[in-house]
Length: 243
Image (cartoon, rainbow, N blue to C red):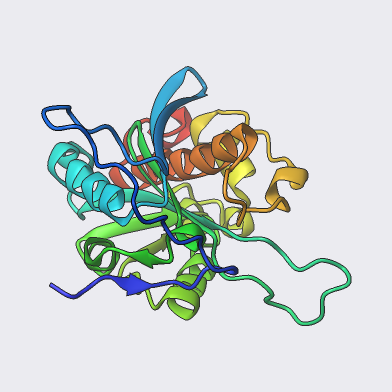
């Protein structure tokens, strides 16, 4: 298995101070300080979400979903909602792409990961292997853009990406959905109302601490992507006109 690889943060991370006391023996260690778990609610669904910049926690998340969510595979392999976030250039900044990918979101069922890539500085080999697995279908709206940014910024290759707009247009026989956004697809496929705040979209995703609004936004995007993908690719819970 390859060694951990790097996705350089916009600013150097502070180095740990020497001489810190070690954890007391016989005490069960808790999660790292850069990791916490929370719940995000969407249309009555409670989504357990891990927010972290720890490569080890990312590896644990991948092991958990690959072992515990095989029922979501369908005939074509495991389905995973995917999305990325980064800070867009300001008006006074020149050029197109000013910032690298800051956050990677993955979601299977009611289990989501918000990985602060730019704060981690590196990612575990398990993540690279997972994304490069052709048996795993990563679903999202405009997913080709996410795939491109992950490849360019972090050398992470996604082997099997499914664009939800194209999938919806084919499965539902509605060609106009090819260019539909996530909010529109959520309403069409799930009958769910989504709020997409431009202010949060354009916020600072490279911040050391993400706000509650950012976490909700990031988690819900990945969860809705998963749910839309699950329904389209398995044929389950589609709108009544398509049954």
